[in-house]
Length: 324
Image (cartoon, rainbow, N blue to C red; front, side, top):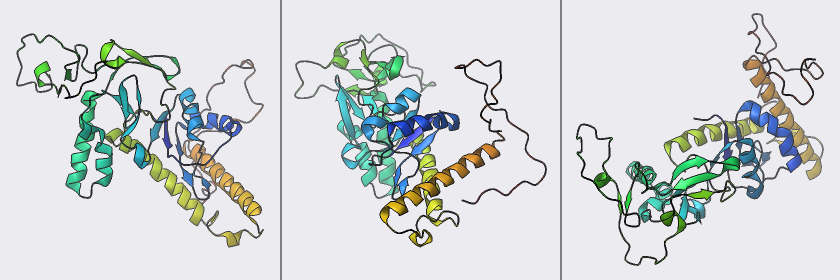
């Protein structure tokens, strides 16, 4: 799984574009950045959704998103494909699979949760297939009932069924007769959408980019990515509130009065805490920061320089790590 992940919660904290440009190199160097909004300022960074979904796309980051209750199941539609859980699916995917996200949230017992997760996993047969990746996040997508590797059979895509021999000792090989079948609805539309008529369609990277994500909502890969980043993020936020060094939850430790003074002091405290975390990361990884003005003479201006070299771990006692 890619280590370039960006966790996104739909809240309203803001980071100006100039600040985003300054932190972009840090995002690339650390590999990922968790993004949620906290009561004392952003846990790391937050921008409005209509700005956020385009900047990580240009940086090549994969977004890990959660949705509000009204968007958990279906986030939009494009040329017949419906966006469910951040992924494009067949327009005729059964309704229980579409609403499986809300079913999972409303479940109260382990059996109900397991049933909802099985429904979410069953969506993969109806997922439109990515045939080709283009620039700027563009994709060529194909109906799941087309091709030699079709995952469903559909009355809108009649396919000849040649006689085949099914090997019962190889259950992973699925014959067309064993695929899920999409039945004709009682009230069918006379004009089929583009995904049901053409061989493939192009989905621009900016279409519904606010909601799309690589790992569909509540799938095992999504839960693995989301839980790790969210736990790390909330832990850092808790340290800022309770740490003996920061304690932003206790305004009595900041003598100046007034909202402006308190806000400025909180910003300085969070900045120093982030700086300590970056220095601790570099120290633990054995990375020697490169000082300004020490670039090799062989490197021409504008050319990328070599990455910082790792240094051996110290054998003698060094200064204790900064407290969180």
